[in-house]
Amino acid sequence: MTHEDPVREVKELVLGRLTGRRPSDLVNLNNERDELLGLLKGTIVNGEGNSSLVIGPRSTGKTLLVNTVLEDMRKSYPNQFIVIRLSGFALSDDKMALREISRQLDAVFSHTPGYSTTETEALEKKSMSETLSGLLAIFDQDNEDSVAVVFVLEEVDRFAATARQTLLYNLLDISQTSKTGVAVIGISARMNTREMLEKRVRSRFSQRTYHIKRPQSLDSFWAVCRSQLLVPYKTSFAKQWNDHVLVSATVRCKSACPASTNALPGTFFWRLSNFGLPQTPRARFVRVVHADPFIDPSKITQLDYIQGLSDTQSFVTGLSELELALLIAASRVEVKLEAETINFNIAYDEYVEMAKVIGQERSRATSGLTAGAGYRIWSKDVARSAWERLEEFDLVLPLSTNTKGTDASRDDIRMVKVDTGLLELGNMIGKNHQLYKWTRL
Image 1 (cartoon, rainbow, N blue to C red):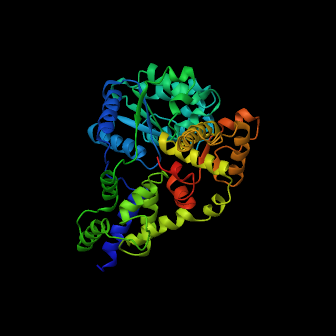
Image 2: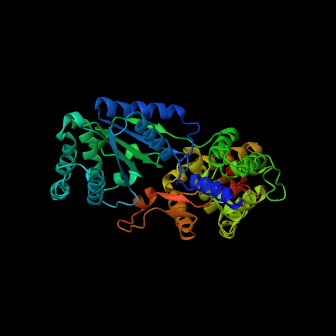
Image 3: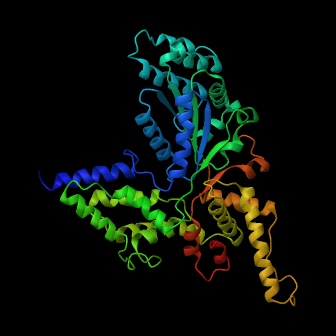
């Protein structure tokens, strides 16, 4: 075959991993893997009812962890359990979720003798709890051959945002009462997902929570990159590819981005404060691999550097000091709390804390000779107006466009996503700006 075939094979494998279409090796999550394996073993082997949450920033391997564990269980206990997957993004209400559960069960049992889809169609007309109980009763028809059920709920926080959280309540309730082994695994990027659960729902949750963190060092970051980029040695080109990837990790790219000394370390430290890790490097690799068989490290850092500045700088340089202070405070909170969303109250508290620090530093510098030499802390009402301007500029992006009840208290707790990373803000305002220190934790 021609040289294009092994090139295409490597591209498909690498791009499949980068885009999540192909599984990758699990890195730095062995402890969580062992614990989740034990939980599912109790459900599949012993018929226990279990539930857990897997929480962490996006692109940190939460879904990969769950899928890897499920694949391990399939190899150890084939045909002893089924998996039902629900996504909070795709299913906007509980009725849609029920129909999706029925559809997946129909697909599983379509070849089972004596099974009819009319069973699930009739159940859909009943209440939520009756429907779920009826669906699970199908598994108990023959106790000797009964199989366990594992529910995987992606973006489970969106199900928690529905009225009365009916789906979550009934799934967790059935996991405790059903004769069939039932496990409910929720996956979410929101750190406060457990707190979002109603009291009655939380009482049925087993309180097992696995917190997944992003890579905390360059070595762990590079381990993730290796698992994504290195390929098995099947052809001479595969070896060339692997050698090039390993060399690219240490290639100097000073001309591409002065802030970094080489490709991957530069990308790591650049994105550490913007929660694009490792999603943003993945996106860059996808674009580069499509264009050329080998990765050009300079393109990776250059793309990150250019995007980091982008058009956002024109907005940031035109902000008032209070607006800029609130924007920096919001970015600081995202990094400190490892959260993807925050609200005005949290950002304002961080602003007040930092303003007090800078005020104390100024007072000490003047030795108390000049009255009022501290740093002015604006009131919450004034700060709220500045926050609204940040929303107008799309520098903080509200997650909900619901305008019902637009009183100040609701606006203060409305969750938003900060559009600009902390390190990017520091590069935009420059080291001579009096708020530059705030951009460094």
